Image 1 (cartoon, rainbow, N blue to C red):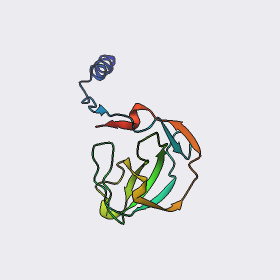
Image 2 (cartoon, one colour):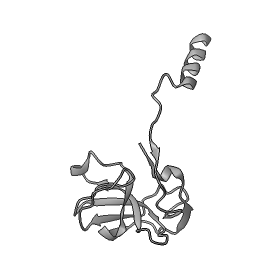
Image 3 (spheres, helix red, strand yellow):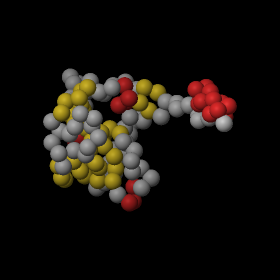
Image 4 (cartoon, rainbow, N blue to C red):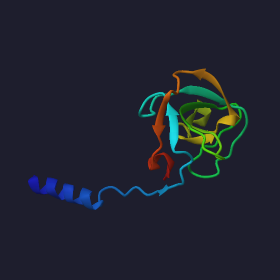
Length: 132
């Protein structure tokens, strides 16, 4: 029994039991974000897309006009960058994309309902811009 546990631990350490996570860290879009809490896990608001948006890379999500989006954070605009929010799409017709969190231009949505104020300024991290 002890031998099996030791072997399992060794295989886990070597990464032979589960495939390694692969991905790339993309350029940061901002150094700070506004959230409802310190961990940015609570929903700030529900927004509706006013027009379509095609994601230019893996940091972003595609949105369609009329689609509802849960907003989790709002990047703090820096110099000449755009203003982006992070969220995930909502609705049965978008089931394949529900749960995928990405950025989208805030100018393309209108907030329908604010659940909590985004009054916590939190530094962004590299993982905020990680793509699998």
